[in-house]
Length: 91
Image (tube, rainbow, N blue to C red; front, side, top):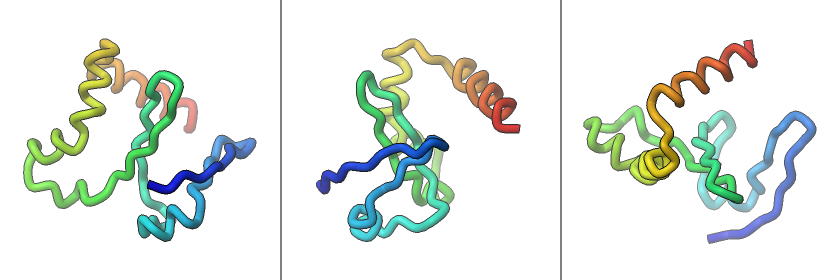
């Protein structure tokens, strides 16, 4: 696993260092899930979800995220409200 240092821009953008992008073949426009874990922020690449064969495969991909949400008492309703709030702020 490579370790690099990056910084956030005034617009809240964080650059994934070139070496990591090349090693992982990350292209412009790819999407990531952002986890807020205590004192860490983790990016999880969203890849090949369109090809998921079943809901079980999707659930397996995100199982660690679901477990973290459950531990924190975050419900599906909480997530839906946050999405709505974010969309209004970005509209």
